[in-house]
Length: 150
Image 1 (spheres, one colour):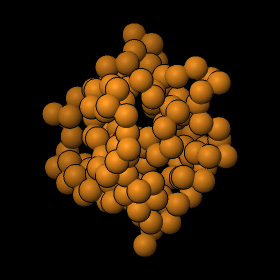
Image 2 (cartoon, one colour):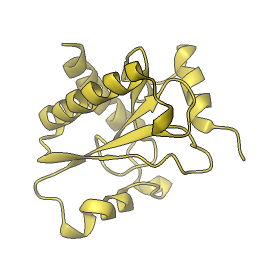
Image 3 (cartoon, helix red, strand yellow):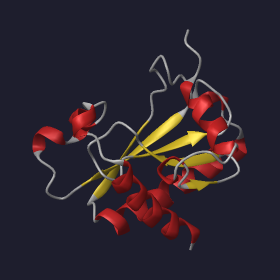
C-alpha cells in the first residue's frame, strides 16, 4: 500500500504550510478543505485529523463533531454557492487516500441530469486544464471560512 497522502496533507496543515483552499476550517477532529482536482467550485472535503480507514473507528467525539460539521458545511455551501442541496459521500478507498474523509458537494438547481447523483464524480479527477485554479478555490474557501467562523 502507498503512504497515505491524506496524512501528508494533514501534516502540512498542522505545520501551517497549507494554502487557504487546503486549510479552510479546522475543528478538534476534522479539517475542511476544497478538493484539489475538481472542476466544481465548492467541492469540499471533511478530513479526519487522525488516520483511520473506516467510519467504525470514529470515537464518539469525532462522530458527534462530524455530524454537526456536515450540517454547517452544507449550510455554508448553500449560502456561498446558492446550491439547492449537498451530496455527502464517503468511501476512503483510493490507494493514496485510505483515510476517512467525507466529500460534501454542492448540487446546483440547474445541475444537468448527466452530472447529478453518482454522475457528479465526472467533476472530480478531471484533467489539469479543467480544474479550478488556486485563486477560485481560495475565494470559495475564504467565504466558507467566514460563514463557519460566525
